Length: 401
Image (tube, rainbow, N blue to C red; front, side):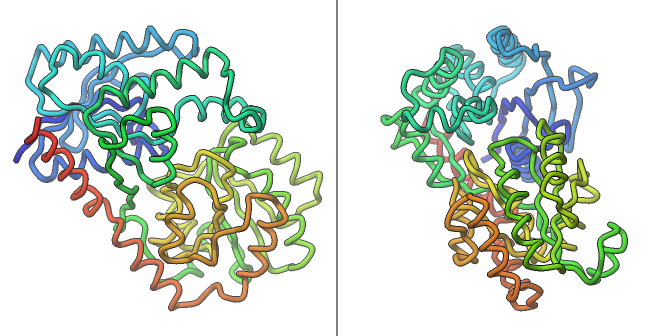
């Protein structure tokens, strides 16, 4: 069955580098390679053209105001673009990857009720906003009751989409639970499809010494690495605090932190305040050209998230490079590690548990057998295999609609 798919994604790679944007791109690109027709509607990030081609996909972009209070205008603009596309051609399926574009697609779907809609629920929009506003502890302590209006509206958007889509996908059992807390009646629409990895780009290295030399990393040190958006929910402050203990106990261990975000200044200040000498902030790391090299050059990747980790493509990317991952028991991370490195799941996201986990795992690093096992495990999550599952969901839904 050959499908004509209209994908609505607020963020789409390579214009945006992030888990949801990368997943949407990789799956759609793979579907195109199989003969399906894909049109993607996404936000215009800078000065890109309104319409262009990308790896066989038609990309249509619309403008949206950056101010949150103007989001409804952006939703209506997206809805208008979808209706315009529906006037131009027939589609077999709507595929939504983010909430604000998702509600626009559901509203526009009223014109084409015979066309099924699949929603990739990658996390509760309202909790993401709470975490980004650094109010996670406040709302968690009162079980998210009495939400502020801006959070309540986001929760209602997620619920509206879950109520009206014909199927929804989550990357982990944890996110299925989050979705059903918002919309308990949607359980029979659920399909679990994990995230994936480009196993050709992220792979084991033949000469780690040469890669370290290229990255200006010492060859005789144990290198810990993390690459995250510098936001509070990522747990980087706890990781830096943990390094205060690690640096006191070991003089052969260093941490490299890659990424950019609002915590850049405060993390650098924290490193200076703690007197850390082997904890480095390297800023933005190019996803295409440099990121694989950092995974390959490292002995251990740290996933220190404190909340809202739906899956963690970084975890799978590191494993594909043969580098083990030490992760907090948050979101989808334990579900991944349980299948390959169950003893690499930390007891908590607190600094003392992160430090304890790092110290305990140092003796088992640089093991060739461990590298081979992690790589083999990651190969089962290639985008080709993940797209097999997505393609089955799409085709079965179209057949039965």
